[in-house]
Image (cartoon, rainbow, N blue to C red; front, side, top):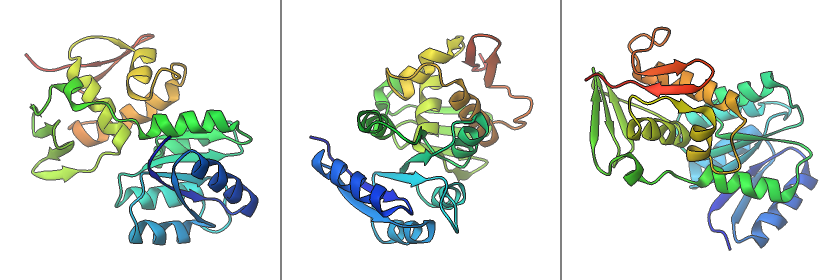
Length: 230
């Protein structure tokens, strides 16, 4: 049985009922909200491990709700969307979602995505309690904190997992599929747009000039390389 607290956010009562029943049967503790405003209120009052967030809600949509969640929380977020275009996928990820699932979805697929979103790369993969320094950026692998110019930079859980994997594999070209499977899990490998969005976000947070990165480098037709000065 699984464990964890999940917040289901969807304006359709039937979807909320089905997800609540299914997830509760899997051992999760489930709370639901019918819109973005109610979701933000629930997150202020309680701790959750994951949010299932409908992208296409009236009023405050899923993208804006996700952005506001990310202003104060590192909870895992999976966006649920009826659209399967790259534009919508990128919008969801760019707002801070860890993953997205297209409606209609199979329940086993959704459960697998939930496990992947809640999965965390062990600290030992990135060198235990080691602290990495890059120019004016300090990465503490034990506390999962990043300090830039003396101020803490907030990373989403998956952003930190990806950065941690880069730190553990410096100066090596890492293929897209290997990165995806290491950070999201073995069922991933083709979702290159995930990496494009997440690497861009990391560059904004750790590079002096994100448009001309020194550390997170693109390896054309292969993947990425974390270049550490010698």
